[in-house]
Image (cartoon, rainbow, N blue to C red; front, side, top):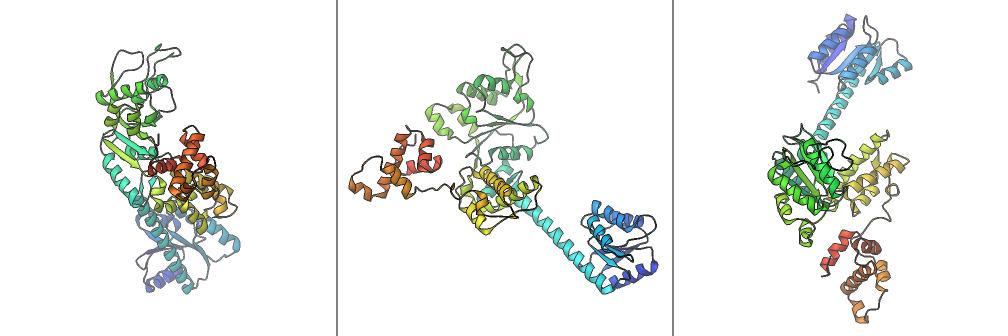
Length: 463
């Protein structure tokens, strides 16, 4: 810290000389200025760590200098000196951005101690900033966040794919951040200066989806009072993000495949082909391979999309990131609600880390938002999260097993085998819900994906 530059600002030559000589003996490099105006010129040319300034000077005063420095160079610490000390002046100085306040005649050891403390605090502030930047650079990719090995591998893959123009298929459970992955690909690639256009394929019927994507001519159908360009042309030279592509109707799948192969679209009602320059990124939470077998997704489109595949892991597969994500969401929601920074108690953090997170990162964000809203102090505890009774488990409780098992009678010897009881409970639940897995999972108190895994584990058909 002795290499830091100190600037002494005072119109009294004797005071300037006294302070400069003292700071030099303490090992600091001291620069002087006879006025606030000269001080501002020096600040523009040098990296000044601490400014010692008089309050009353001809021209610009010390308080105004404090405000100027605080606004333009917040890392520079300012200590105000005055012979007119009062509580009101001290409070005003701190509000203006001063680090501290001393009265004249100054005591040199007091000044030395203040300069040392100011430099220490400045160094800590800069170190924290560098650490935050390092975390952002190491643990983020776009708006994605994660320090776990699985997320670092995802970032590495995204970094390689961002520089290409290949069509990409993003697969992952609901709430894992598939659109954030698509945006990261776009904004870290060569097309980042051009539009990123998202469209939810599940939100529109086939006829409307075709018009949305390819556009239409005037009079192409009832209500088409004017021509429309369509989202492929809106995304020209950029990225078109097709979310929930697994829900796209078969007829539209054929037309999309043609666009991907020929890079041309035909607006509804037109007989002309229009060339497009768009990168297509698709996403789905469905198992497209199963959908192909079921005949609900075209095999040729599946293989056309399956060249570059990104799997976004569910939150339960990278629990090491829960604390980092929770802290990020905590401060983000606190700031959005104009609240002081919030903190998680150790018990609350442990609760978050043990939860199954069926809704993944999106659910974590919502839970943290609820905690920020409901907490009455700076510390968020378990009851603020609302996860106690809602936490799903990957295992059936004995109560749930008994409730479902008593629907029918099993031979006594079967009851001694836990696997058979579990298999029977799932069968009964599916029978009661007429094969609806979502309703069966609700009946059993588990997430639908958990039920699917258990069906496969116990040799039962999952369709």
